[in-house]
Image (cartoon, rainbow over all chains, first blue to last red; front, side):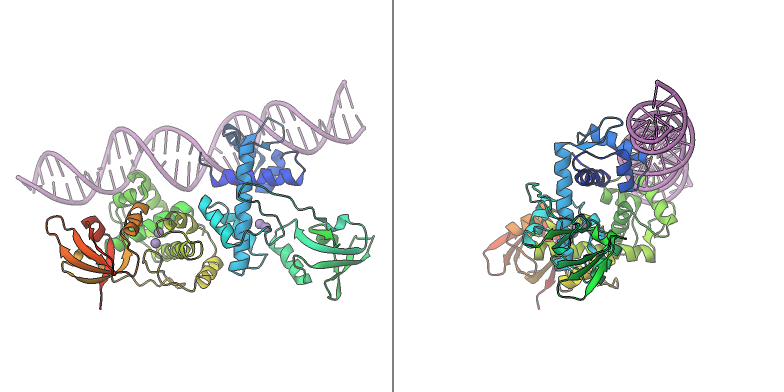
Length: 222
Length: 222
DNA sequence: ATAATAATTTAGGCTAGCCTAAAAAATGGG
DNA sequence: CCCATTTTTTAGGCTAGCCTAAATTATTAT
Ligand SMILES: [Mn+2]
Ligand SMILES: [Mn+2]
Ligand SMILES: [Mn+2]
Ligand SMILES: [Mn+2]
């Protein structure tokens, strides 16, 4: 059963939305937004994916991936993240440059290729944005890190990942001197605009806007 | 100006046929054969490519690449061959396995990616099948090697490349113990079926059918 | 419960890229 | 030069994947 690049992108989008929303599936409008297609086009495709038994779809209800559909989606996520590691580790791209290229590479079809790439990279567990890489069985254990702005207390945290992959956002973080694994000490919380005064590692203090603190994932430092 | 994967494959096919036939362009039927599309479909596409100024096309005449079209074709060839090197050198694929995957990878669009890949691989000059890799300026100097069966004499040759990339052919060569750079000593020529008795490096003698000797490129050993 | 609004589906239409079959043009042997 | 064959083009049709606009269904606020 052959699957097109377009269909792969729909599966990936459904998977991603379903993750974010905690397993309630994906609505037509959410998919339309995510894929920048019109809602009518989404409905078309959902019918076709349903024919192919890749999703469960009933009119006017959120769509869910079938077991087969989910397996395929995870395989694509695996490829995407492995390629991102390759681009960063081997080709020395910046973490803000890898996503768009990986969007293309994730569609290359070859089981062997993915597995050899995985070996070549030394079975990495996380991609350059801190996202976990599914293993070859399709096993994926989600990050337990949470957005910084959910912790309402001063304290010391570790920067584990981001919830946004746009180049501009990642470049902003780099400009702040922030990289995965860094220690973030929250020194002050401004109630007015929810901005934070923080210290990254041993550097001078700086400020995180709410937009920053809501898009970076952290764990409490033990 | 955006160009589709399908259009890229047409450009590459025209380029390849034009090379083989020594600059006389490509006919509709040749393209139809090469791409395993019907002739009518080829005519359709030639009109579209002509609209985009990527080829020069006049009804009932062989098509030629425009300067822009050739530049794009060479860029694709460059990517194809660099990826083949990557697959072989870094991921340890066999030379019979790399072509099909490279057919997909050659369409990944990113100038940066190609150049970094080139650096990562150490600016290789030839791909795993002995084909020369165009440089970043689009410069390509063709092999001066010739098919073995064109040399009608006993003698000692060096195996420089192949004229066919099918897995079965390459596996056959591997089974004969033949790899790029090997020395081939022609010990006997059988007039009857044009088969050759040859010695590869220091190994025991074996036979090349005409089908083999016409598809391997050699130079006279100096 | 009803009315307004929002979400979704349907209907009709478009393009890229393919196909088949028929028509037209080129080619080659006598 | 002419007829048969080959090559190429044209005409008409199909599917995947998109769009817009209208119709339908679901949701929300009164
Ligand atoms: Mn990404
Ligand atoms: Mn990532
Ligand atoms: Mn190849
Ligand atoms: Mn090759």
